[in-house]
Image (cartoon, rainbow, N blue to C red; front, side, top):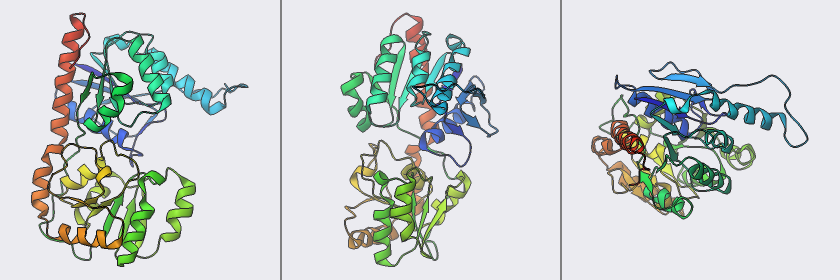
Length: 359
């Protein structure tokens, strides 16, 4: 089976990963390529990883393509998106899109092919218009949401025929601690931006006089400089962006992951990663999109004040880390890979018969 994974022209398959979508593509392509009958290629903007899957880069130009309507950056992005047409999309059994750039779909729709589009984030105007146009132009398109919650949000625009395959993550190979770590720190992981609210977590932790490590890329520099950076000190430390092995070690030795997002999280990749490391997670109700909300190690709290956090941490300290890790196998990468492979098979067989697949 030949699979082409399509990311956006600005996507980078290199560590440290900038976002969950890049982690998703890298993990899924790697998992599928463990099957000798599968040949996977990833189309991205940049890459420096040596993997079992092949890499293709979007074309770039050194020429000035700007005009009155477009900046050079915008023109370059458009030029890069056009390069998808250099691929014979019909030669792939599946073209799997994990892409937010409307220009890619604008050109990809010109060739009829077996397409799967994974929905990673809630609907926004630009993506809604792009996906609807692509769906209407390429009838062999199947949409997949990473959670039932996200599916419901997209049904208004794409209809009811949306598959659901929850994200899977690599199991932390270093294993879980069977005891509370010595001199532990709490952990916060994610994109540093207002909707993720790291500043709220920091303030709660400060009131308790505890240690906190913050990990992730700065997506909103103004927010970081004004709301996060002034709160940093010896106990509250920003660790920057970490490669996966470094992050895995932090999951293993931390006291708990604390998550208090402002928005409705579509899935919550860092939460699944923490659980597979045996790390308890203190979180608000809207911070986890998975249906598996009763998994051992998930400790829900309103997190409106420091007492809420303190009470949740008391529960976390009594939670069996080995049991957390054992139950978290439901988030395994192997499970996700097999579910996508099953979907690929059904889609390919359906299209060969000249019909569109609907669940």
